[in-house]
Image 1 (cartoon, rainbow, N blue to C red):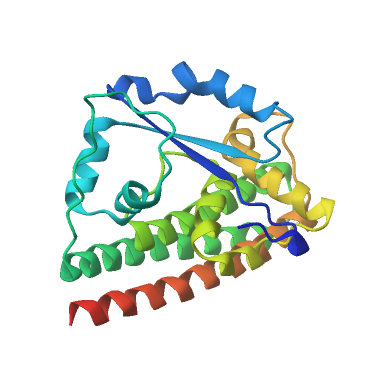
Image 2: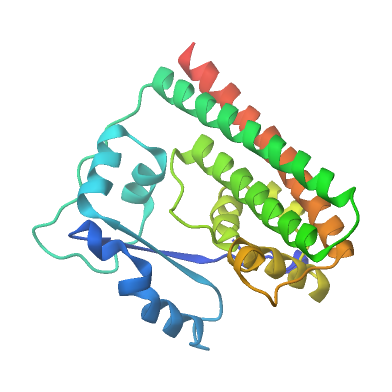
Amino acid sequence: MDEPDNGYLSDFDLLVIVSHPKLTDIADYWWEAENKILHDPSVGRIVNIIVHDLAEVNQALGRGEYFWTDIARDGVMLYELPGHPLATPKPMTPADALEMAQRYFDTKQADIEVWLDTVAHLLAQESTLSRRKNAAFQLHQTVEAAYICFLLVHTFYFPRSHNIKFLRSLAEDIDKRLVEAWPREQRAERRRFETLKRAYVEARYSDQYDVSREDLEMLAISARRLGAVVAEVCRERLNQLRGAAS
């Protein structure tokens, strides 16, 4: 669902189910498709390609994982090769759902707290290139963990991706309250997020990567805001699961 007033434009998620785990490698098999979609002006928005093998998908359906059962129920099939059916989804018990979601929440919240503490420590010291790059990477990890926490608690799934823009789109499609963490009406706001998105690789391996202290401070504010919103909505979800299990 698009929200043009605040600059939010919903992504399209394209699930590709393949016959062998080797074929799920994006770099080997799917980067050209991603690149063509990215540069096709007729698409007009971001398209995320998610690739899993059939056995993995059917196992998840057999466990009743919400992400996959929702897709099996509501997804639009664009192409299906005969003779390769999806498994019949099995419901997850309320008690199992609560136990799994609580475990995911506790683990990821602890990670988020550690990374935010590390960022605060780095920003409190003299601003050097090394510390700025380290802080950017730690902020990336914070944001990645927050979105993964949300996705695991709500769907018991997250894609094997460090692309926080992709993770953000998946999470925001489920709960629009997460949109408020990242203002995107102004170019500077979008630029800062893109700088953070690049930090996972470039802050560690590129001599050309840098980010200003001011940008880091603004990114830290958004990361803390995101963490707070994620914690709030995840606790709501846990309460719902607790009610169903009681």
